[in-house]
Image 1: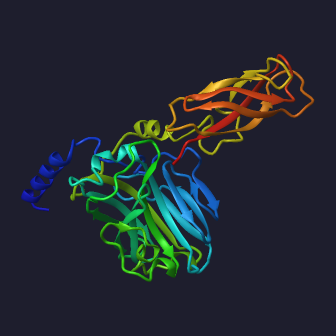
Image 2 (image 1 turned 180 degrees about the vertical axis):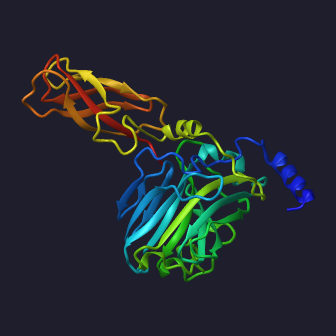
Image 3 (image 1 turned 60 degrees about the vertical axis):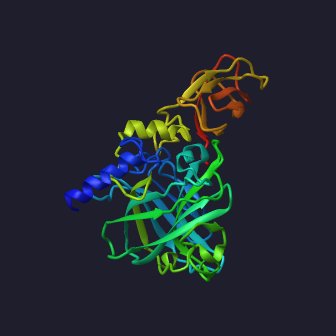
Amino acid sequence: MSKARGLADLGNVYNDGALSNRNLIINGAMQVAQRGTSVSSTFSNYLVDRFTTSTTMTTYTYSQSTDAPSGFSNSSKVEVTTAEVAAASDFMAFVYNLEGQDLQRLAKGTVSAESVTVSFWVKSNVTGTYILEFDDNDNSRNINKSYTVDVSGTWEYKTITFEGDTSGVFDNDNQLSGILRWFLDTGTNFTTGTLATSWEATNNVNRATGITGTFGDTIGNYINITGVQLEVGDTATPFEHRSYGEELQRCLRYYEASYEAGLSGNANGMVSGTALDNSGVDSIQGQSFSVMKRAEPTVTISSLAEIDGSNAGAPVVAVQHITARGFLRMQGTGTTTGNTYRYHFDADAEL
């Protein structure tokens, strides 16, 4: 890149916004994986924080990988473990979901609508054309652009610009508004039209036209993605690296566990409470979250065990009065008055 072009691009950054807080993506370097480092699945699944798979086909392993391009330590990897040829209505995708209140700077639905640029690193053994979609979930609109994996097993840097949309305002709230969807494989219901390279009302046949990779049809097919950045403007700037601690704090708004990653059956990180009575009311103390959640989460209790005393029954605990700040009390049966119990919890407020 020439010095003049570099200065021009820097000027665009100043015009589009601050040099920091450019990246609208949380955990784009795939550093944080609170749920563990690998999961085998046949359905949609979060693993690396804020990034999920979405599929109607095949069995695959989704993992946090240490295979990454220079300057990064981790990537998200999806690898096929049971081959399946996509039926007409099938699809397989890698997905990032965005809140409406975080997209207000795009001025979508106004005459001042901003373009946005997505940049990322990708590595796959399945070369060919893939599709990245920017989906407006509030107004059932989308725009789709193609990119290519040119060389098998090689990290490649991609940038895609989506023009601004003067129709359809994103809701200014904490709910799902925008979706970045990397299509990996699709059936013919998504490929028989004309690719929606400009914003339009969602029409399935126009969403993945031109995709050539048949990702799900061979065991061992894989794709790694990292360095995901979404920023306002038509220019991809260098990736905005944040510390692990910063990314973890942002991720905790969507998901929190009391245990260390992958140690849900381990005593490390367990929280505890003392049974006040055994009548099933206020039997174990409540718990505050370390970070206020995006919305009221789904809370799951696991690994319940007694620390002291003798308890012949099997404690059963149901969470009560969940808020974005914590669960205020828990009620259960099978506890023994005065005895202390420990347990794990996870709180899921993902979009």
